[in-house]
Image (cartoon, rainbow, N blue to C red; front, side):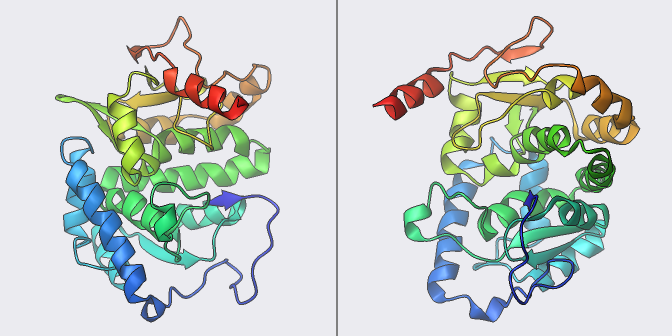
Length: 290
């Protein structure tokens, strides 16, 4: 939920936090959460990584209604030292990274409307809390998120946020993981989306490629549709190790001299789990041209 050059709404604290004001949610707001929650939890078993489903239980997110951030933070703090804080929407990059580096996850407080069930431009409380927070109960993934925030502060100082943002996009938001019984979902943008929960694993259209840090950080991504490529990690330990042990400064310098890679490209050096047909993207392009 980061962005550059935005102005804090009136009433926002210096760190861009606001009160969740849980009591202000309406019956309709809670009903929308419950509807979204039921739809996703019915389809995710067998698709989502077990650690995600375990997080729902550990944090008692099966309780009906939009979670109270204070109660959720109490449980999360006991588990991994993280807390959930409310923000008015997108926040500046440096603010976002600072919160992550200090084990604070920022979440929007609004909930989508019925006509936005399947798509909305700005992440809402369902995406932020249902999608992201369960894995923060996993110690290894929780450490990765903090390491990413610390890396973000360094990237901000080096002027390399765009490259690092791709790491977040292709892991935290739209990552896949390889397990003994096949590929699983863990990215928040997928597990909170009914359509993409099916598309990312089952559709023949997208590429599914092995995780490679430099390659991933050169790769463009889609913000207006399902991804044309997904990157597959072997474990959360691999993700944490690569992030914590890599010296990103020379990597950023190397990336400056290399061209971006388009979203649908497969390189000869890629580890290919599935070579996509790209039919979905082709259809979308044809529809947009009409």
